[in-house]
Length: 115
Image 1: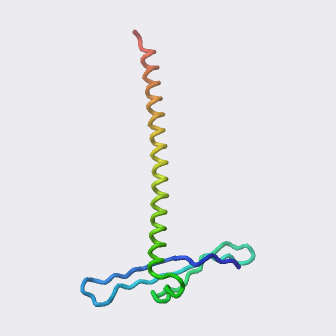
Image 2: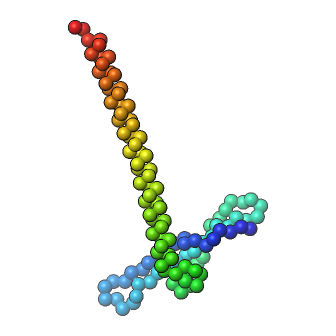
Image 3: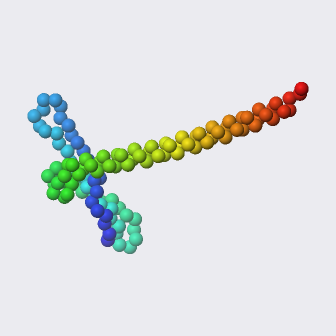
């Protein structure tokens, strides 16, 4: 059986209303990708919800969790920005093609008009 490193699977932050004496709370779920012998498909195996103390004991203190979340969000943003840039470049190319075809059509129309 092969397993991946543990990774952050879920992070839940539970805020409190103003004036509540309880501090905000959070929990995490960690997971690993496990491939069973025999070539079956890989599966994600998740932990139970871990308290902050349990998460830190597993090597996932709050600063590391927030850094992982920030990194994932920024990577997703960068991928979407790159995809948008490609779509915009494709759209610009299509606009150029349309302008060329429109100009060619207008030239042909002008060339075939009776004088």
